[in-house]
Image (tube, rainbow, N blue to C red; front, side):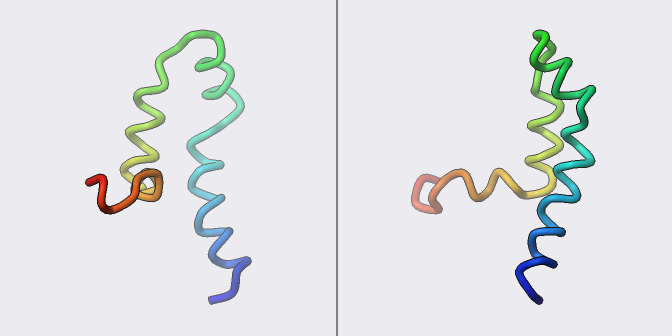
Length: 54
């Protein structure tokens, strides 16, 4: 797998979730909980914390 393919696998799902409308709504005060749950469901939040932190 080359770096471009890995980046595509990462960027494409995030782009699908983080639409302009979704981000504008959050900026206007809507809750970001549903977006974070969807991102977490993709496994992306696993990289935010070191393994030793749980």
